[in-house]
Amino acid sequence: MKLNLTSDELQLRKPILTAHGEIKKREILVVTATQDNVSGSGEIAPLPGFGLESLKDASESLHTWIEDGPFPSSTGAAGAASCALTQLKAALKGVSLDIFLSSRVLSNRDLSVQSLIGAESISDVENMAQVAIANGYKAIKLKVGALSETSDIARITAARNTIPDHIHLRLDVNQGWNFSSAQRVLKAISHLNIDYVEEPTNNLSDYKQLRSVSGIKLAADEHLSEINTAHDVIRSGLVQVAVIKPTVLGGPQAAYDLSRNAQDLNVRCVVSSFIDGPVGLRAARDLALAIAPDETHGVGTGALFSDPIPSDVLPNHGFLRSGT
Image 1: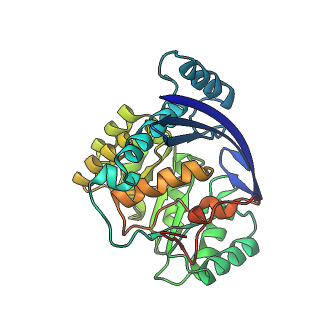
Image 2: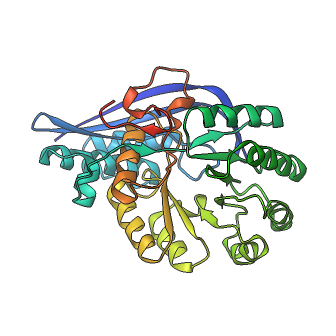
C-alpha cells in the first residue's frame, strides 16, 4: 500500500461568524492510500476552537505514518487516515462508501442538504434565507451565539418569519451562550418552530433543564469530539440529536457505528461537514446516505467556497445529486 499527503487552501465567498471566531478560509490536508491501482482518501481541515489538533500537528502525525511510523494518534489525523483506509477497502470491493458501510443499495442517492447562514445583520439573514428558499433547500442552519442575546433573538425571529413553516430552521450556538443566556433566548424563541439547537452551552448538564424551559430539541456537536466520549454523550439521554462528523469521530466506520447506536436509542443523527473540501464532503455525504438517507444533512457546504468545487459535492436545488 502506498500513502501520499497533499495540501490545499480554499477561500470562502463570505466570512462565517461563529462563537469561536470568524472563518474566512479552509486549510486542508488530504491523505491518500493506494493499492492495486485503486485509491481511497481522507481529509482533515482543523478549525480553531472546535477541538481538533492544529494543521501543523496533523501534518506531522500523518507524515510520520506515511514514513512507516505509527498510525496517527491525534484526533483529526487519525480520522483522515481511517477515512482513507475505509475508502480504499470500499474501492477494492468495487462499491461506494455508503454501500460498504450499510450493505444497502439505495435506488435514489440524492441527498437533501441544509443551507448555512452566518450573517450578522438582520437584512443579510433575511436575504440569505430568501436565496436558500429560492434554491430549494429544505432546512436552514443559522449561526448564533457570537453576538448579543438581543441580536440572536432578532436574527432568529427574522429568519423564522422569512422561512415557510415546512422548511426547518436549525440553530448552531457553538457553546456561545452561558446557562442564563441560553434560558432567556430559548424561552424567547420557544414559539418559533425551531427544529433543534446545537450546543447551547459548553456544559452538557445544562441540557435537561434547557430542554424543559423551551421544549426545543437539543443537539450535541462539540460534545462529540472524541469517539469514546461521544458514546457516553449519546447514552446520557441529554440530547435528542447527534451531529456526526466523521473526521472527529475516528473516520466513517466509527462514525457509522456510533450513529447506529444513537438511532437505537432514538437519537436522531444528522451528518455534518467541518466546512470540508471535496474529499471530506464526499465521505460525509456517503456516511449520511448510509445512516439516514431521508434526513436533511449538513454536507452542502461546498457552495460556501469561492474556489471551483466539483459538481458532485455542490448542492443542486437543495440536494447533492447522484451522478452530477
